[in-house]
Length: 81
Image (cartoon, rainbow, N blue to C red; front, side, top):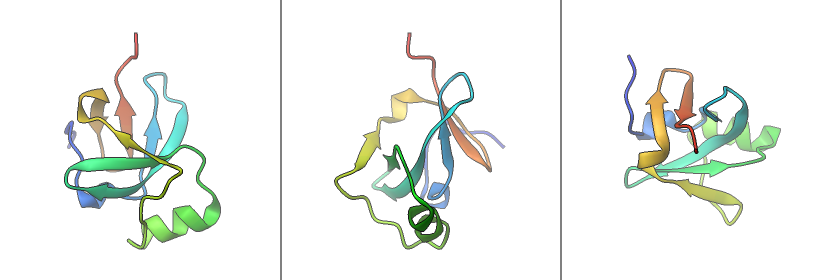
């Protein structure tokens, strides 16, 4: 089932641009906002999958109006043009 907003269940999901290229990973969802690490390492991926993720200074807030779809596996962004 697809949706266009994030929940805490989305931590650890890949974030893809509109062309399908992976650009990062959701490290934390706080107050309905996803925080994305643009260059996640293995330790970050494992922490997020286990629910241990916390946004830090290297993470970026993803505005909800930029999200096209959220699926079981990924978050896809709208075309930026």
